[in-house]
Length: 84
Ligand SMILES: [Zn+2]
Image (tube, rainbow, N blue to C red; front, side, top):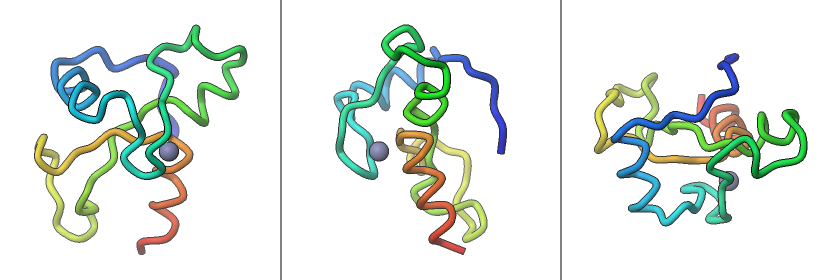
């Protein structure tokens, strides 16, 4: 899954960000909000906040705010690999 390196400054993002206080839903550590907070694009690619489906789409989870949370790209990827 490749996505362009851009922040997601949507209303939903802000709502989730505020609700989680900037912490990753999976590892509970702070997430960088903007690319410039990290020294390298490669780090940003790993640690940028991404949308995670609480109930995976493969298990019938939907693209609705109630089923979305923010998580590091890398945590999201690890979770995605674990749940099949
Ligand atoms: Zn994380």
